Length: 97
View 1 (tube, rainbow, N blue to C red):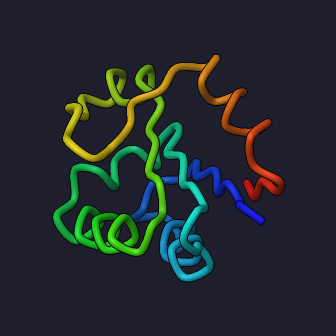
View 2: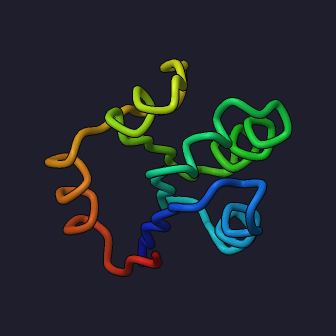
């Protein structure tokens, strides 16, 4: 049962990302939107993301939010647009936001 975790908040303001990473299993996905894309600029955040990827979790980030916050594209993070986001939501059986 694949689950899509949709993250919104800055990593410094809460523990949304850590909680999602604890719950995510192989086949699940994490989408970084809004201020949550700032986690991709943090070495600690990126380390946790890379570990999740090694465990089979797919990582996505909304291109518009990355550009708005000056976050560069990086290998292993699939950059998506709004159409891709809708497709991901439809592909997963459950979505947590």
